[in-house]
Image (cartoon, rainbow, N blue to C red; front, side, top):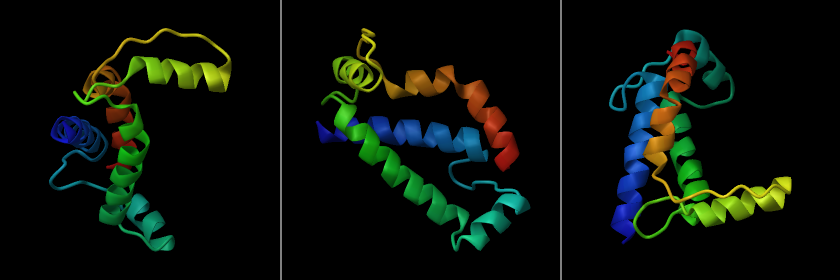
Length: 112
């Protein structure tokens, strides 16, 4: 079942990278962002790889064996942090990233 989880993570990561950087295979970064990364001793490849590892670390505990986000776990987290009960059904992360794709592409326009 780990393959389903990793497949879902890979799908979402590729979608996010494409929205933010124009391509998952040849990410585009503008010179101002490159300069900023150079000041902190990183390049865009390191930044993306670090982001992927962090994202997977945060996301995996909320994923079920089928790769779907466990809505009950997410609801409990929201309740614990914000003292609000919000029922959430299980969903695929790609559904969420597709729903916010226009926002991601707008953000990407500043990065590219």
